[in-house]
Image (cartoon, rainbow, N blue to C red; front, side):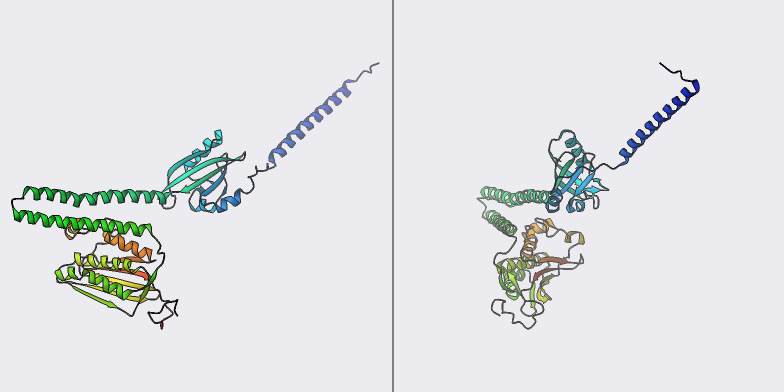
Length: 390
């Protein structure tokens, strides 16, 4: 039996049901919002990745699939790969997007521009998936290798060019001698010129071999104790005939008995090259002075001439291989453009350096600086005493 429901009661029950349904909908929406507002846990980076990044020689980055940098090695920041939490270079960002899409490991080489200095950096880049949610980016700076390769190409090109000149000259002079066989005076003149070209070719080959040997052995294996006074005297003796031919005066002043550790023949070659340049580029009747002294922990050997001076722009380049400030005069004096480069490498092999000073108009002074074999605080040490026999 069904009891009839009054209209008032039905309205009340319908309103209550509507309120209940509305409350449930509100509660469901609120719960959904709270679930959305709770931060979701970040996907975990595989264990050990951070430790590996810290010891990598290459610059390393871990990025998510959006390209945001999650982890980075210290060198990556120094290298300028990260900017405000993102990869700084568009080329690398595009690689990460491609790997993120298909999961295929990619390698590429780029010329990247440093954000700080604007210098061009040659970089080898590899991007690979790392787990499910991350990518690993490895960047290796190959700028030094590119510079070495460019230097090698320039060296080979320069050597080829320099060798062609005397070889071509000898060939032409030989033809001239053959054509002038009935003229003794012409034959004698051409023969003397051939002899000069042969000497120049011999000197060039010798200096190329010497420079290659110095570059191939950057560290002296068994340095001996060398008296700088003997180095200076021997170097001057090698250049005395050339100086006398130009009526030039060679003077030497060595304070005390400075000692260095190294190879005496190599040091004599370095000082001789400096004195030889001074004689070649100075006028007749002038003088060249060579001095040596110990200053604190350094031994300084200076060569001063009264030549035309070296402009500031050339002072930065004169130690480059085959660089000639005055090419015509170098050819006239038999210069190869390798003498100062050899001096630079000899000094570097002995842990020192070479510098030049000139006002650009009147004379120049070259200074070789080498580590002293005697400590600066041991002033009373006999200069002939070594550490082994004290």
